[in-house]
Amino acid sequence: MKKNILFPAVLIIATMFTCSAFAGDTTKIGVVNFEKIIQESSSGKVMQKDLKAKLEQLQGKLQAEEKKVQDMSAALEREALVLSSEKKLERQRELRDKADDLKKMNADYTQEMNIMRNKRVNQIEKDVFDITNKIGKAQGYIVIIERKMAGVIYAADKVDITDEIIKEYNSIYAKKK
Image 1 (cartoon, rainbow, N blue to C red):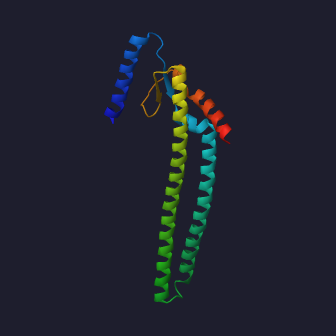
Image 2 (tube, rainbow, N blue to C red; image 1 turned 90 degrees about the horizontal axis):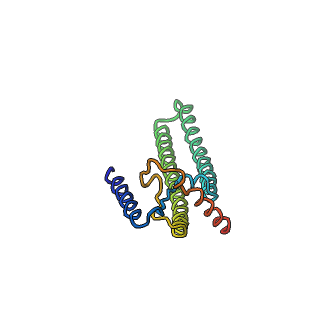
């Protein structure tokens, strides 16, 4: 883990010294906070709204199935004394099967939500990378790093270009609609 953070840090520092030796005071480094882009960009907000709606829909289905399992369990408890041992075993098996189905449904829905979220985040990430590359080239940055992935502990506000990227991304996203 330390090697993963140490190598990029050394590379960045070496790049800064090398470039500053050749370029003087024109060294530009940018930092981007991808989580902030997800939280504040138009596309990120739409993604969050869509995910929340899908989650509520799936939770409604799960709750309905859970209610059926609870009802089956309550009915079995009420009728346990009057059922034959064969019928009682059959109902217990049905209840276990229904409970297992509920667990599987929950796991499937969780996986579905993760796939949906990852797909949307990956698309936003691709768009943000394209915008960041465009801004980096246009404004002469030597390096633009993502705050969390690069292990940045501190970066001055003047090197954070997240708001600029959000603004550009929102204008591009508005044109796509």
